[in-house]
Image (cartoon, rainbow, N blue to C red; front, side, top):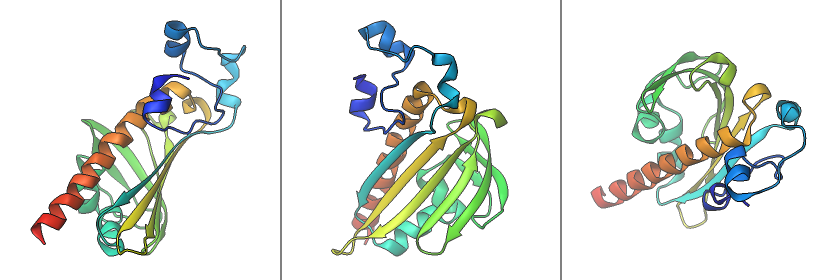
Length: 178
């Protein structure tokens, strides 16, 4: 199995697909017909992380543009309300964002593109309260159609790891300042 998938705990559907770089470097198997990869099931990145902040604080970090700017993106110009459209700057790249769903206190779902409309993916952020007063964030990003590749999933998986570290640092800063 390619280290990218092991080290970053990326869930890829179908799981047997490896980035071509892994196959070339490590002699791993690839499906015989990579041309049909886009027609296979969605490719997804899934993360679950415990955060040392309460549910209300975590909710404010996923449900407001200022919250997004603190951990998710460099800048956000979008209302986090259903059907809202806007932009976000992520690692220097402007993304188009369209909020799909918001369940107050629980989840935000949105579409965004990487650098062109054909690269759109769907992100779902779910907040879960833990018994000890901390919270848990469930993150799922699904790549569909032509964007559904294991290589893209692996690259985006690294970006989610960086975002999660930023979220943890926010939690540490919040607890130190309290």
